[in-house]
Length: 141
Image 1 (cartoon, rainbow, N blue to C red):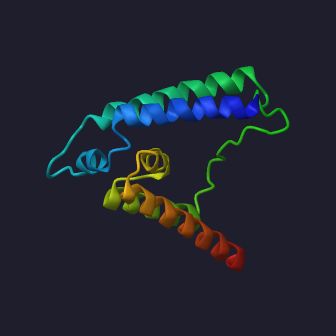
Image 2 (cartoon, rainbow, N blue to C red):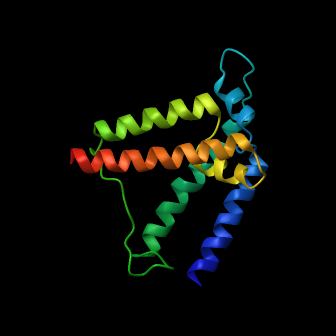
């Protein structure tokens, strides 16, 4: 049941990414190009995501103590004040990569299913980068 729910959630998420244009790197880059070919349509996508997340999390946390389909797990909550150099470095890398190529992980995985070579190169590079980051963290900590 857990796998089926995950599959359905992933399909809905992927459909939303395609429908909103988030899986189109040129649309994302135009959204980020404030002084050029600015396309403000993704503002509504982001506002919808933020609003849904803000309301949804509060409703879920009030009603459930643990995840419904993973009762052995606990909800992960960000604790205020946990901003460190690793978090800032990761955020900067994410933002720079998103701006340069127009992909972030979810839309890139969605785009790979359409056979895009650019998306495939991005996903492979992302996986290599994650492996390197994991090794670096292990060595430093």
